[in-house]
Image 1 (cartoon, rainbow, N blue to C red):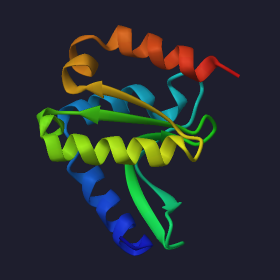
Image 2 (spheres, one colour):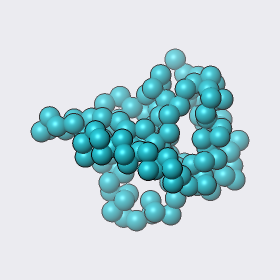
Image 3 (cartoon, helix red, strand yellow):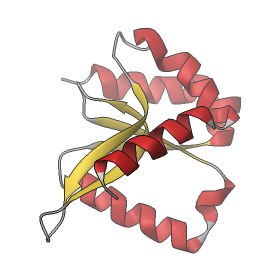
Image 4 (cartoon, one colour):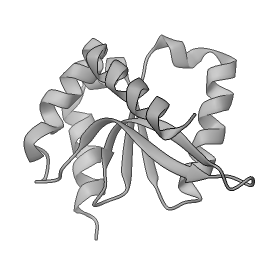
Length: 125
């Protein structure tokens, strides 16, 4: 995917957020969590072996901490999606990103637990 396609996809994903994503965005936007700036549906550029630019779209991203937050629904139970996510996680962690994954159920029904985990990560130096 090229940069233009990544930007268009990110815009489309923002316009069609899931209820869980909208809920989390309400908790993160405007530096509401630990004073950190987050972007939603943010294209993250990376290069592989062929030296071409590639992009992943992170559900939420804090540049200051290189933290990616992913909200996973039923779709992510598919074995092909899980395999893709494992590959994506490996690529991004090898480039210095930290990735936290939460389910829709966790963010909607157990936000306090999710928030505690996020605060611990964000407050680390």
